[in-house]
Length: 412
Image (cartoon, rainbow, N blue to C red; front, side, top):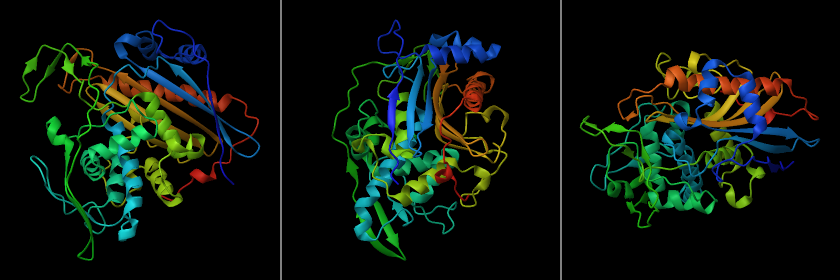
């Protein structure tokens, strides 16, 4: 049976900024349950620049999900550094682009060899983390969601091509999203150039993708300056704000909607969905929710990549493994003092589900790029606590129809 959905947008209370969305109900819930640490954050939205979206999910008698979004200080025009969250659309575009290569006998497991075609580009012809020792779209996606691997993102960015990546997300309605940088030191022009790529099988060339160059122009008219100082590439302290004007941009609402479009594709307009067949979507959901200790290829050192390494909500600050009856389908990001996560959370024991997305800025001294941020002291506890408040609310609230969640059970 098809899953249909109705998205209901909660009424928003007016704020000083007409673009900002805040719901008093969510605000009251968080304030009423907050610890002193969380209260300090909530009381200083300008300092911590936090945004929160809670998505309540109610099923009808046919198990169709209906959504209600609640917001706290959410503003698509309020810049934050999205960091690794841009890996989600990059992976989605890669899976969609693969559809056009099926006629060559290519799928996500086909070995993909990356060549160098322009200055500072690098070659990748092997992947020791893969069972067969070869790189592939599938292996890169596994690493992106298991531990937010930067090189895996760079390779999918190169496969997509900067122009195709951005035009694809724009056509799906994410017009405020901009993905223009690899996670490695490159100039703006070097990031516009992407590598030649070859797909091979048993030594036979199946398809050669030529190098690409993005000729479209981006709107950089709005200047985005952050902090009071920063370290430059030579680790010299520059007492001027860091300029993020020409960096990646991915508003929290776009991120939340993109996660929803993957988890519940029929809850968003058809033009907003990514073209993933049932198998590709199941593959994606499995690795969005798998934990590093459950992975054999890649295999991870649990002392570095603990099970909540890429799961901020509920358990990150304690490095605890979530209970086996809870699964978190998400994509986080962290960089320059910004922490972000967007998640669909399922509790199979108590038969509940909800979505929660949030970001925060924790940089007390205002100096960027010095790796001195309050992630452990403030950032991760913020996610853990707001996740727990919403989770406990979900445990207590009455539902007319209990959800059937078996579609989200995977073998890991």
